[in-house]
Length: 356
Ligand code: IPM
Ligand code: MG
Image (cartoon, rainbow, N blue to C red; front, side, top):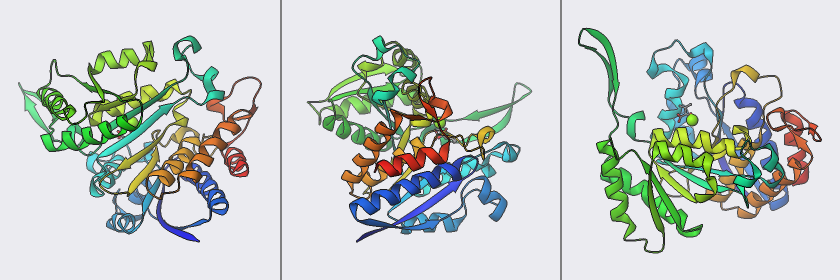
């Protein structure tokens, strides 16, 4: 029996309930494909603030570093919103990404066949289906740049800075070019080079790197135009590579094409096979504990974990196929349409596990 040590961070809000469903599905996959998970639970975000006084306890970093990969639910909630920025739950999330060196965030936005009609985009626009990979730089840019408060012309002011080094751009671009090579060989680099100096360096660097990838068709787009094109003609995109903040915004937008943000998984990778896997959505405190959240983004993140970190591609594929089949019958409220059975978090997890 193959055994994998996994660090599990349930987090806040709906985090615990969606992670539990993903673990259920992972267990089912393990039974079928012959592996076992050895789970190490740890704290991050609001629950860590409550228990340990900080959003990212050192013990969490240590536990994650000892594991083969990390599965994460979501963090944050109104309870902790009045804390200073560096003590908020979100600081824990940024901290763990950085502490583990996870600079490449892969956010696939694809449309599951049974969900085509749940997408707010017309079927005529979706065409043959959608399969976009957003590659978001995750440990640099304005999220990690210098910030502060000052007085500007006598008025209190605040600033954040966007700064990228050539090395940081090169390593994220490398990930994106490699992915494009394995997909449909089209890479769109998104920036704001008409205004921002950091974007001009980004663009120059990506162009320079494209010489190593003569078979990948490289294009460039300003971020405002990209936001529009994602709705106008999403099928034009294969791989998108962009900065931390633009990737944050564009991946939420791209997720809606798939019907619900509750469907979008993500993988955060560094060097080697280690990775952190989390849904792209937040902790949704308004529906936490009601048993109605959609666990599929976390379940699909677990599938990405099997593929990228654990070398279990068949199990990953089985989970994705089970999700697809389950969607033909069952829907959580966020993706419910007439003619389908409306189910809660737990039933959705059960159904996917059973299918496996
Ligand atoms: C995401 C989230 C986080 C981010 C927040 C919660 C800090 O929006 O993973 O997309 O901005 O990276
Ligand atoms: Mg986001």
